[in-house]
Image (cartoon, rainbow, N blue to C red; front, side, top):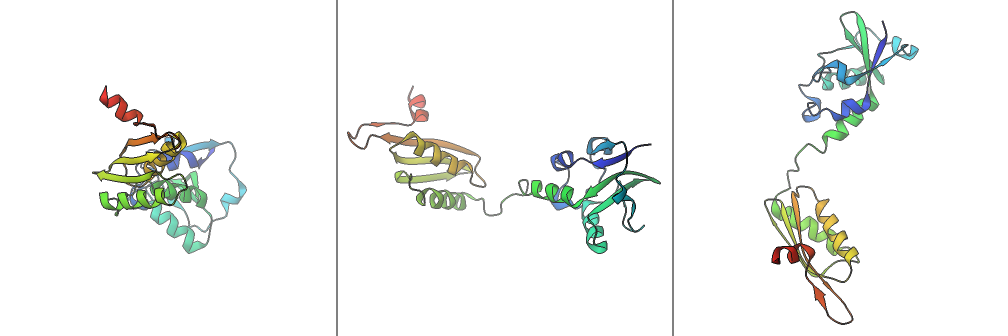
Length: 193
């Protein structure tokens, strides 16, 4: 019978890990979807204290506790008497890092979102002239004058990359700094018909 190892990519894709692994077992998504078969077990995985093993139903938090308590980097995963996989620190770190994106930002209310976007945009050389940021229920509206399309894109990206933003609407007018000629945003032009 072959040995199994937890596949790092599959573990970090799991949407069922929950708040940093509390209440989630290693088998939450079914071991078949979390493991990759190895033909031979690595010899370094055979020398763990008996108390430093995990079962399929062991929570991720308990796996971390085992690693810390025994100062080890890997914990074998058992089903009955058979070793079916192994969890490494790297697996856990990647899983926890992926969870950071799922934890809601407690300061993602509209005023905090507006302040963060305004601070990011105003700190840049390409910032719009007379910029204004309006936010309602996570939906952002960008206003102001820009002199290049690159400045438009950079402003939109700065808003999109702000935590709590659900949608961004571009109302930035492109102005030729020499002639004063201006063009409304592509979004506003489409809306005008």
